[in-house]
Length: 424
Ligand code: AMP
Ligand code: MG
Image (tube, rainbow, N blue to C red; front, side, top):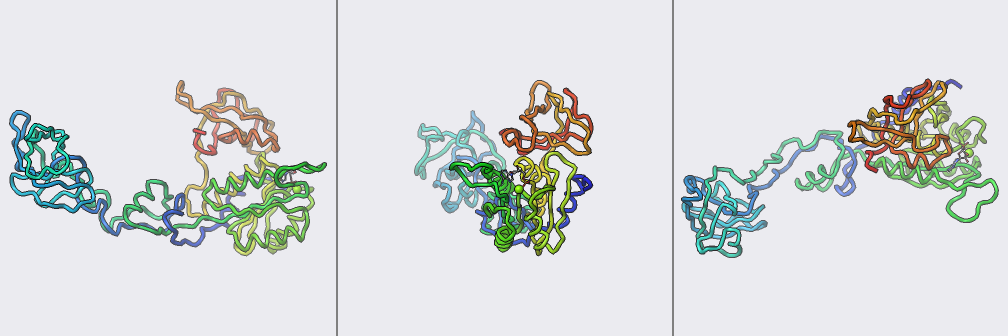
């Protein structure tokens, strides 16, 4: 079977994974989702002019001549705390004690910081808290109109575009939408992704192993990778190498999922029950391919109805790597993301990454670290590279992309795909 370049395999997968139908989801469920339409502010933020500091709301003209040597005395006519209405108004020669976030009262056009004032009775302005109506305040600094006032609509004006379509919503975005009073937000929904382990040798959980049995690890890695991609994992369990059971479990999964990941049963020489069932359910459109990458060469892909099905290899590292390079970009596209792949950086190989030419792109499990000494990223293998050595995958925070050939010399640069920001 010919080796298919990763780019070509990725292109075929993406062509069959269009974005899901957008829908409005509650803000609480929208973290990490991409907006499906531009969002517009229906009200101003801040909703009213308010003070950025604790101090006194004044008429700037009244204090135009104020200085430390020649303070201006104003009559304090009230206090406005955050959450209170903007009363009383400020007339000529008057001031209102005002606390951060409180609305600026009519008549005032600036706020003097409390640090620039003194109270007439000997208390500093800072101490002059509580009801101070009837007191006087000495202003020691001139202010201009607008000083220390956060204007209504200063962050967002009514009718302004808040975020364009395809914005991935993070913490700050959700805060902005909450500040606008949005309760639901139109997004591409999270893909519900079923994960099915196949193989007669697999057992769940602890307890003694019979000869030939191993414990299922792929479901844990793949369910976690799905969750990490901001999609919704659906556990479809383990199914043995049995045609009827595989068909039943897949059919049940298809009824409730937007995409399905299976692991196992896609290599040449497997008991081909997964193959038989996927071929039948997909109407013969399943592609069984050999991707020119190591690990993770065998791979199957197709659609059943409109549901994409990814047949990932059984080897624990191979299933994770093929998720990373083929399934994850497709799930992100389904969820309306524009950036489909993980970030890549250049890094110095601190150890040679030796390879024999084999026509494949090698995805070498590495640890990438930033070095302040030379201002570069550096990488070293995180352990052995055989496709059953899951621990070195767990320890890796990046995959070095070593092109076909003899490998990368120590001290040479290599491209690495980050599996997360290297702060873990
Ligand atoms: P297969 O792709 O079914 O030929 O499996 C390739 C290798 O991966 C075999 O050694 C399997 O035992 C192993 N394997 C398959 N599925 C899993 C799984 N869910 N968890 C751990 N190892 C697995
Ligand atoms: Mg198997």
